[in-house]
Image: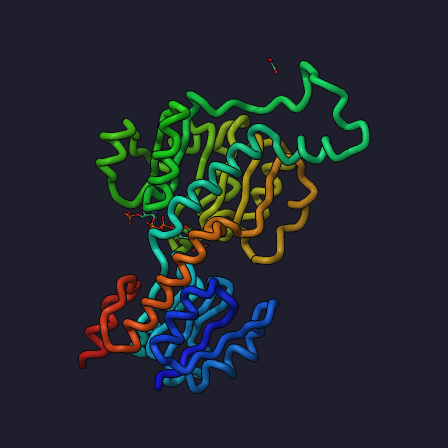
Length: 328
Ligand code: NAP
Ligand code: GLV
Ligand code: GLV
């Protein structure tokens, strides 16, 4: 009987699948994140691991989990996992692509509107005694969205969904991505440009690249200085894609108009000074946080784990080269 460890309570649907697959299931059902020490201890005798993006799955963990055969990340991003090391050891790594695409793109739009139309500041004002004195010509003026230029950095599943959703707002779409996306160009009249051009011309810059060595600090002080003073930065990708300290400086010095952030460089910590700024809206990494999406992620991660442990090819393998290693 395979032994499986799930590092946090996830929607029941996935856990039910793992139970009916007749695995010996152990769940860290505590409401707190599992400590590193406990995680290292728990993987010791496990064949399968269902883990979160906040857990570092590195060489040391794989040393502790000698019998691990499948690591199913409960996320689409897998920068928390040393995939190369897993491949070397013949461990299959899976993720949850697709089921969270719309939810995350919607979150990027929610942040975009919240910051540009000052929704959080407005809400704060409404809760103050006598904060709302009636309609005012100059109260909380923001920036409009329709007809403006949207710059998508990383036109993958989520970046493309974000671009598609701009159709109703009649926006001009620019994108910077590793490869060309002909459908975006055909259907949305989107234009592929260099990052520098995108930063200079966009009113809203939305980040959707994965975190890799190439995208680490892709947006730093220099890139922020290229943006328009009236432009906004939206980040629902990964915190370290942005130099957060440089972003705080740019926001404080009004080099850009504002930012909407869902992810941070060193979660759950925030760069010093960030939470004091009014021109930023902060969300606690909620991109995929809809009931429906989390349920689907739970099913997908469980199905990946089950397939892998049963010697089948899971649907969402991030290291397909592992099968060559396993066959040998
Ligand atoms: P995806 O489909 O793989 O899209 C990533 C895109 O980035 C691809 O188009 C890829 O180009 C492009 N890209 C990769 N490296 C690049 C580089 N160095 N320069 C320029 N473009 C590059 O992934 P996705 O499903 O859209 O997810 C994207 C990321 O969103 C995830 O990795 C994750 O970190 C983040 N995310 C966050 C949340 C949240 O809760 N906030 C939720 C879900 C996902 P190609 O098309 O040429 O490969
Ligand atoms: C969330 O951030 C994910 O990568 O799924
Ligand atoms: C505002 O409420 C308006 O009617 O213009």
